Amino acid sequence: MSQEPLDLDAIRARAEAATEGPWGVIDWDSPDEGVNFIHVLQEQDGLETVCALPNPAEYTNRSCLRADAEFIAHAREDVPALLAEVERLRRDRDEWEVDSRGWRKEAVAQAAKLNAVRALHVQEACCCGKPDCAEPNRGCEACHAYYPCPTIRALDGDAS
Image 1 (cartoon, rainbow, N blue to C red):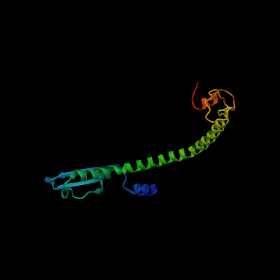
Image 2 (image 1 turned 60 degrees about the vertical axis):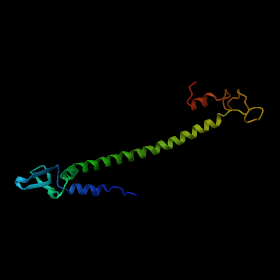
Image 3 (image 1 turned 135 degrees about the vertical axis):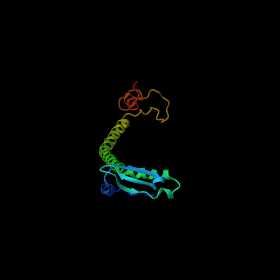
Image 4 (image 1 turned 45 degrees about the horizontal axis):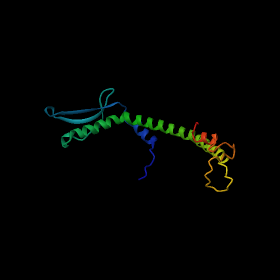
C-alpha cells in the first residue's frame, strides 16, 4: 500500500482553524444532579466546549470515551508540535542529502585513486612463468619490495 506524502499545509490549516488551546477534559458523572457528560473544553478565558462526546451512559466503557476525549484534547497541542518536528526532520534530511552528494562523489574519486595504486603495486610474475608458482620472494612490480609491499600493507590497514 503506497502512502501519499503528508500535506503539511492542509494539516496546519486545520490546526490553525481550530479553537485556540490549551484544551482539557471534563468528565462529570453525577447521577444525583442528573449530569453525565464528557466534554473537551478550551481552558483559557473561561471554559468553552470544543467537543462533546456521546452520552457516556449509553456506552459500557466510559474509560474508552474518556481516553478519546484526552486524545482529542491533547491533539490541539500535539498536532502543531508534530508538524514542527516533521518540518525539522525534513530540513535535516534535505541538508544531509545535499551534503552526502558531495561525500559520495569524493568517495568514488578516492576509491578510483586507491584502485589505481593497487593496480601499480602487484606481485611480480615469476621467472618460471607459472601463475601459481610458490616462489615466496617475488616482489612488487612498482617498488620492488617483497610482496605485499609496504604500500599494499598500508592500504590493507597493516601497520607493520
